[in-house]
Image 1 (cartoon, rainbow, N blue to C red):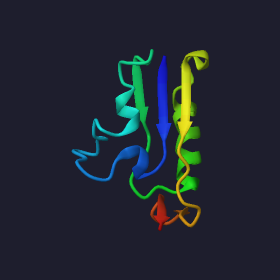
Image 2: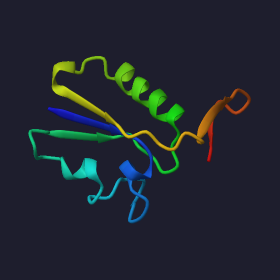
Image 3: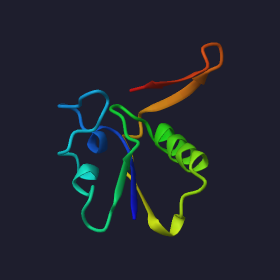
Length: 98
């Protein structure tokens, strides 16, 4: 079974992150290889907004259409509501604000 986690620094971690990898002390990492989960995907980033969490969760499942949804658990940790993001058309990138 696969665990897909998304959120902000409460899910990704806020220190000890190395090479943009979540540290092993954050809650999604604690499930890797245990509790029946053979794979853990952590989509979270520090300072994420609810907008980003929803967008990247949808993008993950769109890019991985071959996933057996009967064997996936998605856990979303919602960040504070005053965060947001918008798409900059000129630079073709998502911009977040806190």
